[in-house]
Image 1 (tube, rainbow, N blue to C red):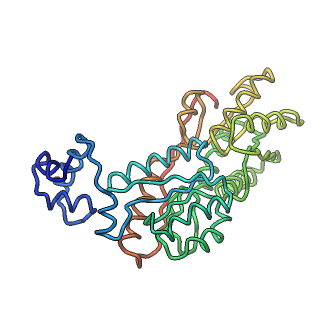
Image 2 (cartoon, rainbow, N blue to C red; image 1 turned 45 degrees about the vertical axis):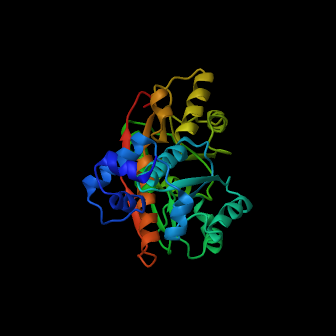
Image 3 (cartoon, rainbow, N blue to C red; image 1 turned 90 degrees about the vertical axis):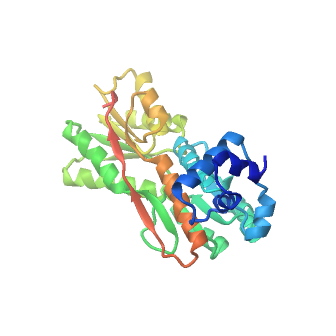
Length: 324
């Protein structure tokens, strides 16, 4: 399929199609939509090498994720890919596993000009190491919100969301609210724990219990919940920092012969499809919108290298289900 044929299908000039492929902002919105629809219908694949030679761009974005098995991360990546493709870009996905050597290998694509920019979803504490490797290349940190620094980022207010969860549980009469957290090298884990502890302090609730899961799996959530159940007094509510951990907690409570929510209420975080499947109360993050916004921030940085740093807070939503 040639660019001439795409122009014919869309009812526009070849020059218009070329401008759309090169992400020019001089194309009218209706014409851009017609061209993109024609490209989609024809399954057109532009010659990326020719574009790179012509524009000095690869039209590729590197996306580095610490754990692609995390359903939240997977949803964010879907949003990234959708928005990238809408703007004529493709993504290269690197599952770094929070390993600096694997990150270094992926980031070598920057120096080789194989990617135009990078989106990271890694632990906040690793940003200085990453910054040393990335240098001045266009970069957006996704989901791990930074209050300062030169890196643009997009996320939610984890403290507010966490405070809302614990306040709702306390308003419902829960007196012994426990937290299942994860790795504190991640800023979201620290912020959600801060929100949890602040409400306990404000409500003058004496009970406080935090278990740290080894990873963000249901099995790790089950292990953490089992430890909480072995303590006296046991909690009457549990807030887990991810839906997968909360799902594991539900299983541990069931195995112990206890009822949810009568004996123990459970709340998760992220709003993944899993939460709906197990009827879990949760904080829903706008995961795909976070990914889309990260792409917008990155493309702006690619087009305008001197653009100021942007920090975007997205809205979250509390979803009440049968677990509370």
